[in-house]
Amino acid sequence: MCAAPKQGQKLPAGVDVEKEVVLTGQVTDGSGSPVAGAFVRLLDSTGEFTAEVVASPTGDFRFFAAPGTWTLRALSAVGNGDVTISPEGPGIHEKDITVSK
Image (tube, rainbow, N blue to C red; front, side, top):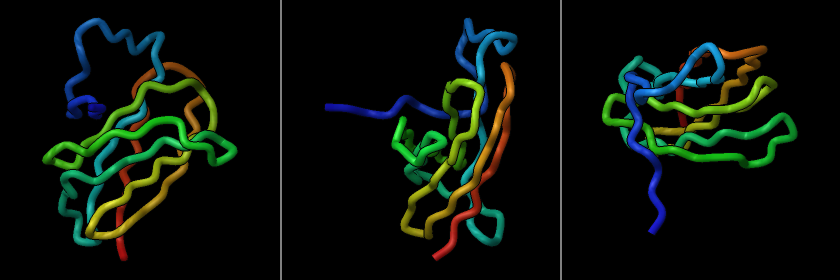
């Protein structure tokens, strides 16, 4: 059985944000309420699927990636949404996703 890692705002011990590219954010609905359990996909610059996590009960998600242009896509019963993020180097890069039908 395959499962996505548990998400949340606190980074795991040993993560060096001086060396790692961390993409993080929160999935929300149109009123700003968190969307728990949304599937958040990481797509590369060509639109190819790279990874997927399940948003935490507070709508939080996190990916470790490389510098470049990425699409974050959230899919949920509340609706779907996309955002683009282009980190140029290491650090924590935040981008929230608003979903709607």
